[in-house]
Length: 286
Image (cartoon, rainbow, N blue to C red; front, side, top):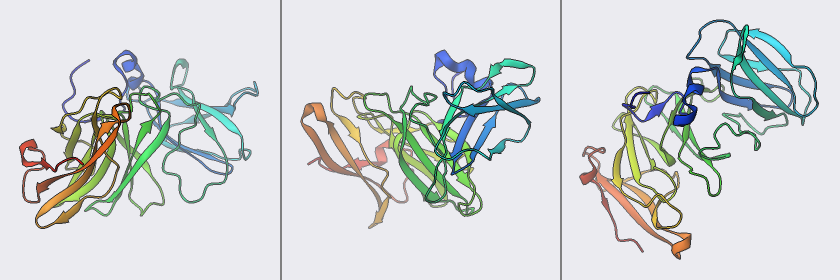
C-alpha cells in the first residue's frame, strides 16, 4: 500500500479492506419501477465476469448473465421488491464484489445514484446519500457530488458522478476522502470542491483540471476538532457568492454538545490562489 498523491480514490476503501479495491466493485446503482441500472469495474482483472441477482430474502436460485460492459441494466423485475446483486469473476466465484441491495419502485425524475438502507458498502462513513451539489463544467458536462451520512458515524466520504448528455445518463467518476458537506464550483475555468473533512472537522478545498477525474491534495483552510464531543466546523453545500472582488461561503462553528453553533463567512480575493490557506479569512462567529 502506497501513500495517496491526490484527494481522489477509485474507489476509497479503509486500510483493513484495501483488497476490495482490486476486486469487482459496483460503484453505481439506479433502480426504477421494474429495472435496476448498475455500473461496475474490476481493477484487478479485465477478463470475463458474471452478473448475479435475485430477490432478497426469498431463498431463490441466483439469476446469472455473462457481462463485459461496465454499465448494465437488469430489467423485467417486479415492482416494490428488494433485490440483491453482485459481480464475480468467471470461474472464480470467490473473487466477487460485495453484495449490493436495491429496491424497485416508481421514481420521480432521473436517479443519479442509490443506496439501500440495509446496504453496508459505505458504512465506514455513513448509510445514506446526502448533501448533493451540482455544477456545470466548462466542457458542458454536469458533475454531481453526494456524501455518506449516518448519525454517530465518521461521515467523511463523497462520491462524484458525471453526465455528458444534460443529465439523461450518469456515470461514476471517483471518490473524495476525506470530504463531507462539499460544494462544487467553477472559478476562472477551474473546478473546485470546498468542504469539510468530517462533521466538526477541518474546512478543505481542492482543485481538479480534468472535469473531476483527479484532484489536488486538499488545502486545510481552518482546523476543527473532528469530533461531535467538541466544537468544529460545519457547512451546507450552498453556492459560492462573488461580490466586491471576493468569493464568499457561509460556515458554522460549534457542536450540539457544546450548546449549539455560531455562524460565519469565509472569503478569499477572487484573483488569489484558492489553495493557499493564508489567502482566506473568516468573519467573526456570531
